[in-house]
Image (tube, rainbow, N blue to C red; front, side, top):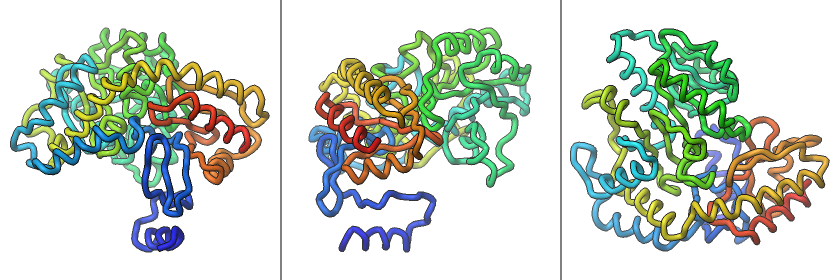
Length: 395
């Protein structure tokens, strides 16, 4: 079949909730993807910050093949070996205590919301607790996650959403304090806002939130679904701020392509929130997904991924800053680690994305005017140079 025939078939049978780019990707190797016609693309999207190890990592692939030959699924009615190992690795990397595996980042956010409400309910028996979320945020598409997503465009057709949600300004501590009431049970935010336009949290803001939550016994929930798993040079972005959340959500690069997420709790929250019967999932923590998690952690250690991100980031930032200085179409660069955004002016982000695609570069947008670069964490200076040359041509 031709590429067009594949696209036509997908349009015929797949519910159209995405405006897909006109390309059918078939295979990957390293930091490149190939379409069904054999054209090569330098990947600076990584499946929306998922494929951190790049494509065709043999050790990762073999770990999944080996697990398939053992057992793929048993349900959470039984223990399984990969889950026990993966939970330990995630707890150690985060310095937190208890892990609940989910199938996605959205589900991890749902679990974090339930944990916060149960924590507050156990304190006072009330059912009118409130959560403070951030404007311009994104936490997922299910009704609970959508309720704490600070974008009315996503919310409007699906109201009423869950109640008791207040919104504050990101990086504005006084704005958060103004929303606090005696019903507040949690504050949720992305450590680096992703879909909203690549905005890292200010250190003083995050530290102030931690102090506020400690003073009022409010849970701090940090969404690390996109910015976590090494993307900023730490296992999780908050580790670079000197704070620790009460609950953390993670997904995307946690499984490097296999659908898996988790919410992770500190001991205080775990002891006083969810118990058997409160929450569950059929597939969460299944042997195949957790084999992927284990392989990801093993490969990060073997390849020195965190150290590599810290080393390559200054070079990437330098090249992007140079591009911003040269081009009238780039107003600014912002970001953290290998999660970078270029603010585009004078043409639409969609134009740049499509022009880059035609030139063999995969990039995506964030917000209304930001070009988002979230490449595999194993990129080299040569890859950065190639990306910069293509973008310079497109701009």
